[in-house]
Every structure is written in structure tokens, then in C-alpha cells.
Image 1: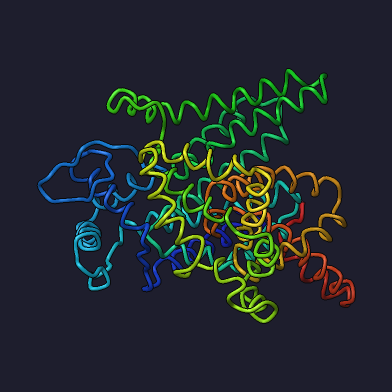
Image 2 (image 1 turned 30 degrees about the horizontal axis):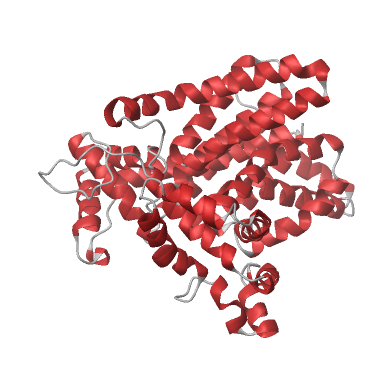
Length: 466
């Protein structure tokens, strides 16, 4: 028979699954502008077995093409479309109707996938919390707090890559942390590489982790020569696992399209145009941006301090740098080079021409992108310093190791994109851990003031803290 500890954990995962299902099955399904791109690609895969970015058309097979960012989401949508007729008809309506809001959004097969992915994301947070703290109660706190981030709900109801992104990144971070705790286990590093490969198939920007890890490994080898073989072997096995996952897509692109890469360079050119338009901001706008990009109240505070006109270009409005990049800068790059080489033109003329300004703007956009969950994210950022300072060295080290890939990716997103919150949604994991540590400290301090009899009674029903 199961003991109380096991029964409580089993009940916890049942409740966790039900909570994820209730959130995903809520009726307010959202179709964003990016959803159409994923749905078109998914329907092309489902109907014709062809990966293509052309608009889906019945009885007209598309030309094979490259993936716009990741390829996992189109195949996920294709599977949902093939499994359920109602899902198939709803997806077709979204991309063919004049006004998609007139469509009946009945996508049960896709919702099932999202439920599983959101559940795995939150479950992984529990196991990450155990690895970080060695404490079941803190891990439970972290899971509960992860639900406080509205992004974990919002993107469970949007036809985007985010549900699978949350799942894959959480699994990668779980194995990543476990591998650091057992650096001599090559199988774990290999699994870590497989998980990273899956994440790259969902969000291609995460490919940047491979060269980043290579640089860090080189620095580690130079710093600590006695561990250089272990570092070289571990990173090599991780890279091997990643390459194995990415190899089929790479080979397909080379053989079928004669393209030596993973995703469409046209998409990168679009992203660069959006991003590098911000390099035109003045230094005064840059300074004001640190207030303007604070979550929730930042724009209002900036209006009160400086006036709306002083920060208007930092917004998403018609006069913004974003719109200028989308409507003007991208067209300039395409005209001066080509859709395929626009990214190179933009790098040469709008980043490397003033790298100091480019780096400063990158830092500002990283600032904009890290407040996942708005005010909850801000609270986590403010708590990070004190919590890490007062934590034991083991917990501090574990959180630092866990956060390293996410911090690198936040920097990448600030460099190559407009750095919106959903790109950095894995930050929910270290944020939830930091807040769990803080909440645990408060509750245990309060528990010390309770009569010992009540504390002893409560401990009988709580999991073993480990």
C-alpha cells in the first residue's frame, strides 16, 4: 500500500493535471496573427505531407519550403487535424474565412496536446524544485506559484508554439540541472542534448545555445585545466544529442531544397528589421525606456514623467520603431539585397555600424522581455537578489545553473528580436523557485510562532521535506 507521502504526491499530480485541463479547456481560445502562419503550414503537412509556408488551399499542393522558425508546431497542428474532424474544419475556417472570428473554434485534438504539454511543464517545475532545494514543500510552492503567471494560462489558449515550447524548455532545464549534479553520467548529457534539440525544433533561436555553450566550455577549460576532459566530454555528448535531433530536418533541407540550414532566412530578415529599427532611438529615449518598459505601470509612469510624445516611438503604435522596422526598414533591406540576404544587409548597416548603440539597445530590450507575468515577474526580479543572498550555497548554485541557459536566451532575444514576454516564458521556472524560497521562509517563520502541538499535527500530513 502507498504511504501518506506517496498518496499525497499522487493526488498532487492528479490535481495538477485537472488544473491544466481546466485552464486549457476554457472557452476563450485566441487566434493571434502568428497563428495563421502555423496553421497554414500544419494544414499543408496534414493534407499533402509537405512542409511549406504557402497558404493552404484545398486540392492545390504547395511547393516545399523551409520552416519559418520551428517545425514542431506545424507537425503538431497536422497531427491534431488528422485525428479529429472538428479540429480540421475549424483550422481550415481560420485560414480561409474572410473574418476568422466568425469561425467556430472547436479544436479538441489540439487542446488535448496543449493539456499534456502544460501539465508536463508544471510537473517538471516540481522535479526541478526538488533538485534545487531537496525539499518537497518548496517544490510544491514553486508549482503553485507558477500558476500565478498569467502567461502560463494565456498561451494554453492560443494557437501558437508556446505550449510545446513551455514543455520542451522545462524538460531541457530539468535534465540540464540533473546533468550538472551528475556530470560523469554521459547518458544524462545525451538526454540533455535531445531535449535541447526538441526545443530548437520548436524555437529555432535556441540554436544559439550551442555556440554559447562552446564558448563557456572553452573558458571553463582555460580556467580549470584539471576538469577540461570532463567539460569537453560532457559538452560534446550534449552537442551530439542535439545534432541527432536536428539532422533529419537539415538533411531534408539539403536534399530537397539545396539549403544548408534549418529555417528560412527570410524569417530572420523580418525579425532583424523589427529589432534593428530600435537602434535609431535617441539616448534620451533609451534612458526613458528603462521606465517605460516596466510592466503594467511603466508606460503610465513614463507619460507622467516625460510626456507621451517623448516615449511614443517605444510603443507598438503607428509612430513606433517597431512599425518603422516592419513597414519601412524591411522593405529597404529587401530592395537593397534580397529577401534571403536582408538579414546580412541589416546587420552590416544597422548594427555593426554602431555596435555600442546596438549593445545598449539590446540591454534595454532584454529588460523589456524579462517581466514574464507582468507584476509577478517584477516581484520575482526584485526578490532575486535578496533571496539568492540569503539562500544556502547549494540552492544558490543550483538556481544559477538553471538560469544560465535562460539568461543567455533572453540576451539572444534582445539582440535578434523585439523581445516580447512569450519568447522568455521559461523564466517562469527560476522566478517560481525564487518566490517559493521567499514564501517558504515566511511561512516557516510564522509556523515557529504556532503552538508546537499544531505544528506536529500539520507535519503528519505534509510530505517529507527531504
